[in-house]
Length: 332
Image (tube, rainbow, N blue to C red; front, top):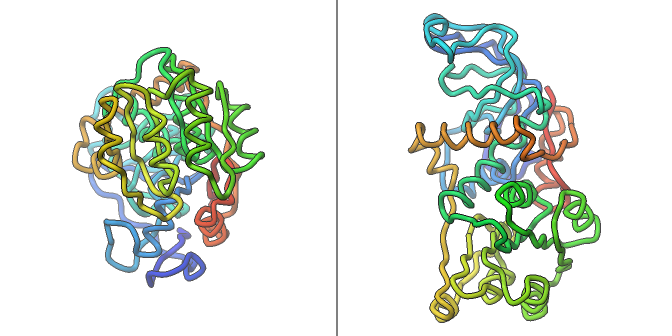
């Protein structure tokens, strides 16, 4: 098997490609030939040592893969309706180890890929769509006809927020940093858009949101941090909710508490990844709900661009520098 390996924490360019013997298959496990591996911003943070979880070295980055079952271990056939067979298509959230030509995982952790999804779509939707679904149905309960603002809307989570919010009957204002990203958001069904550029004016952004939403947003989903976080908070109407997902700008904002108090606003945090690791059964329900939406055609993940496994360092660099529009997957 071939894998991308992080032997020393640092920049993505330090990653190396190595060949390894296949891992033995244990009871209750399956071997999955990876057809596509999702690439996420958090992968770069792991490599740099900037993520709150710091795995021992060396490790293989990558948390989500899709592919074909090529081998099943003992006891897998006893799972009844949840049994797996060679040739089945599956998605797996592996935590780490995804940048590889194959993975071995517990059969119980696999999710079936519906015919409506390509391998590339399946491999790149897990983290982003689970985050969006968890945020909008668990951390807050988005209602039909509410206005949602997606900050960093052309990124993976942002695009998922647009799709999930529409599936829930809400209206979406997509905020992105250049014309190409704004155009993608329009194509993906955003009801309104704001181009905040590379040096956003917080006051102008707040005013633009209030005008587009007819008085203020009900929910702002923030994946970027920086100066727009406070602007998003100030753009909320009465009982509005600021949903904090991440800080792609690299700047963690300090929010004025008086703006939370005013108009009875709420600020909620979303850390789906850590929650999922500690709540396996509940997360399985979340993933099943997301895949059911895809099977029913209620959500339609963007088809990602595909890059060879060897280009993992370059793809992570592009993510860090916010050059990626849409989603990217690695193809072993």
